[in-house]
Length: 171
Image 1 (tube, rainbow, N blue to C red):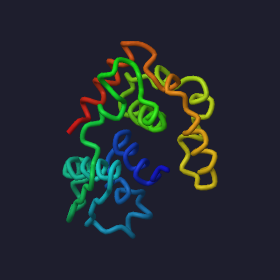
Image 2: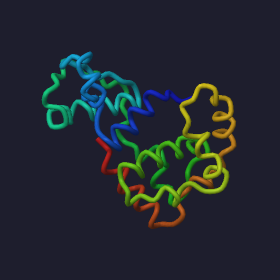
Image 3: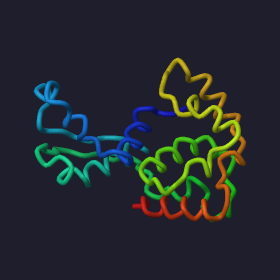
Image 4: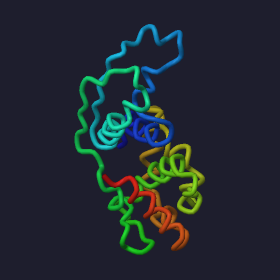
């Protein structure tokens, strides 16, 4: 099962900016926020915390980062997609591909998610990407039913774009 807050943090960080966004909120709610903040996360959340820490000074200089903890951040994302195996995605990693490809395609518009998400995955994408606890059982069933061919790169150009994108995020 997915940890939606970590997934959301990861995708938000890649797509629109780091975690300090929560404290850099609209004026009416900003009064409740303090200027001191800390980042902490595990796995994808750890990567989001790491990215937020690195970008904090330039993204939200008015905020004071007081601590950061990045536990088990994904530092080499190329292994997630099985890069190096041509265009095959290992069956045990197919479930992560809808989240991974969607997040990466938001942060890198040159990566066309439809080069990777086909068939049942494309038809059930909303279910696969949801963070609605009421949909957890449907989501798990949809993840288990993913055919690795439905999340594999369409061609060598798509694989090259994925490799380039993931390599750029490797720490």
